[in-house]
Amino acid sequence: MRILCLGAGALGGYFGGRLVQAGADVAFLVRPARQARLAAEGLVIESPFGDARLPVRTLTTAGPGFDIVLLTCKAYDLDAAIEAIRPAMGPGTAVLPVLNGLSHIARLQREFGKGQVLGGLAKIQATLTPGGVVRQLSDWRWLTFGELDGSASERTRALAALAAPAEGMVVEAVPNIMARMWEKLVHLGTTALGTVLMRANTGEIARAPGGVALMHRVLERNAAIAAANGFPVRPGFVEEFRRIFADPAGGYAASMLRDLEAGGRIEADHILGFLLEAAKAAGVPHELHEAAYVHAKAFEQRRDAGRLPALQS
Picture (spheres, helix red, strand yellow):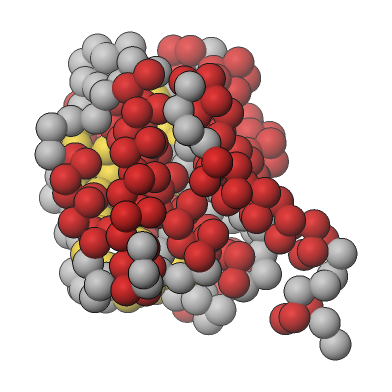
C-alpha cells in the first residue's frame, strides 16, 4: 500500500512519520522550503512515546500510483489541498481526510466521487515548531477511520494492519465513522468555543467563577446538536468530557486558540460557524455559539487589517 501524506506538519508529520517508522511506503507532498529542510535534517519528532529523526521521501508535485492520500490540512486550506492532490487521485485511490469539522466530506465527494472518500479523525495535540520539529503535546495519539457507508472494506483493513505496529499511535478502523466524527465535533467545538471566547485553557476556565458550569452547558448543547442530526454520543462520552472541563489543573486548549494567539488563520467558519448553524437548525439555544463565532470573525477582521498587537510595528 502506497500512501501520500499532504504536508509534514503537526498531523501529517506525526502520523506519516510513525507510519514510516513502521515500514510503510509513505511520500510527503510538501512545499519546496519544507522539502529542503526535510532533506537536510530529516523529519524530526519529539514525543512522550519516543523521539525520532527520520529520512523521508518528499514530493513538491503529486502524481499517480497511490492507494491512500492522507489529507491533514487545515479546513480553510481545503481548496488548495484538493488541487494539490488531484493528480494523485486515480480510480483506485481513496482520500482519508482528518480535517476538523464535517463540511469537507461533501466537498471531497463532489470532487472525487463518493466511493473514493473515507471518513477519518485524529485525536492528537501536536504542533510544528518554528525550527521544523513535530512536537507532540500530550499522550493523545489516535487515528480513526472507516467507510462512510459503514461497510468493512479491504482498504480500511489493510491500512489498519499496516499501521498496527507503529509506535506512538493507536489506529482503529470503525464501522461508525460518521458518529465518531460527530463526537469529535462535540468535544472539539466545546473546547474551541470555550478556550477561544475566554482566551484561556480548560483549567483556567475551570478556576474562574462559573467556568465549569459554562463549559458543561456548551458540551450538553453540542451533544444535543449531534443527537438532532441522528448521531447521539456514546454512553459515558459526555461524562468523560465533563470531567475534563471541570479539572482546575487541566491545560487543554483547542489548536484554534494557539493559532489565534499567534495571529494566524483560524477555522472559525468550519467549527464555530458550522455548529452555530447546526444549533439554529436543531432548535438548540445558541447565544454562546453566536458570541464565540462573532468573537472569532471579529478577530479575523482585526488580523486582516494588520491591527493585532503582534503585527503592529
